[in-house]
Every structure is written in C-alpha cells, then in structure tokens.
Amino acid sequence: MIKRLVSLAALPLLAAATPALAAINLDTSPPSGNFGNSTVTCASGTFSCAFSDTFTFVTPDGFNSVGATLSSGPATDAATTLIFGTLGLLSGVTLNGQMFNLKLADDYNFASLDPIPLTPGATNTLVVSGIAGQSGGGSYAGTLTFGNTAAVPEPATWATMLLGLAAAGWMLRRKRGTTVQAPRISFA
Picture 1: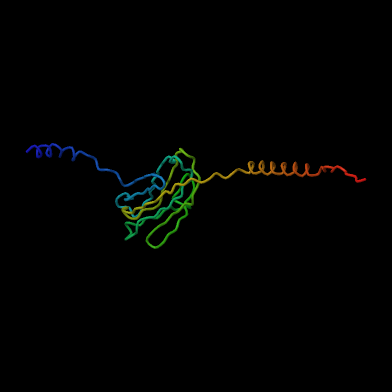
Picture 2: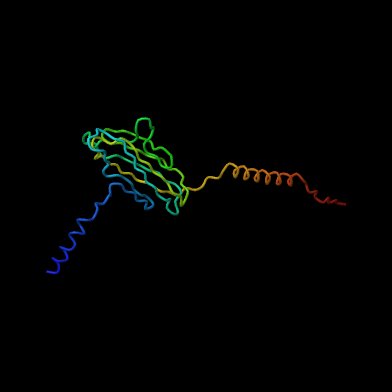
C-alpha cells in the first residue's frame, strides 16, 4: 500500500521533468575522448538546413597534443544525409581554427585531423558544421586522441648549441698546436 502511494506521488514529478537534451555530447577523458550529435535536426518542412555545433574543452593535464577523427552516420535516405561543410567553406570541421581533412565515401562522410599542439590547461574550441538532410535525423560521432609530444628546440637553441660546440673544438685545436719540448739527453 505504501509503495503505491509513493509511486502515485512520484508521477507528477516525472511528468513535470523536462526531456534530456543528450543529442550533443563531449567527453574528454584521456587518452582519448569522444564527441558527437546523435540527432542533427532541421526546421520542420525544409529540404535541408545548415547546422553548427560548438564544443569547448580544456586540455587535460599531462597532454600537449591532440588528433581527431569524425564520421557521419550512414545515410539511408534524403532525411538522414549529413555533409560536413557548407557552400563557400573549405571545411566544416575545425579545432582551434585548424581545418580537418574531409572525405566523402558513399553514404558516409569522414573528417580527420593530424595531431596538433595544444597548450596544457588551455580552453580549446571544436566546431562541427555542415548540411543536414530533410527534417534532420542525421548523426555524427568523433574521437579525440590526446598525446604528449616532446618539445622541439627552437632555431636559436640549436644555433647556441652549435656555437658552443664550435668554441670547444677551437679551444681543443688551439691547445694541440702548442708543442712540448722533450729534454735532450746526451751520452758521453
């Protein structure tokens, strides 16, 4: 009896709850995270529409580079077609302004980004835009792969190191140029 009363009391709370907007997601759990939109939607009655999703994330601790891949869901009809990029844009997918490489293959759309450097602890912006088919219904999903690449010395550092090696070589050669006279021994 008490269970029924509790259940009846909970019904209005469930009815008043707003639906979850879980269509767009971003998870940056190192060493690889994921992002996507399970239901790209268009305004009702349109043949196709432009969409743009913006994700922001902070570079995880201990990582200073990221690469990424992205693909659209299979297009089963005009309603689920999804194309990255729009007319006039070279790429509809960017990370901190770096454009992804795009490839269209049959019913799928692919995008990839070779690893780029990131500043540890900095906020990064990923933008996915394109054209969704009639009434939406298309989807996409991607993976971020975090890495930790060794820093490459700057040209000034290389020049200083080479100058130091040259100076050490010059000093060694200069010392070698002085000869030590051996004592003369004479026999009677």
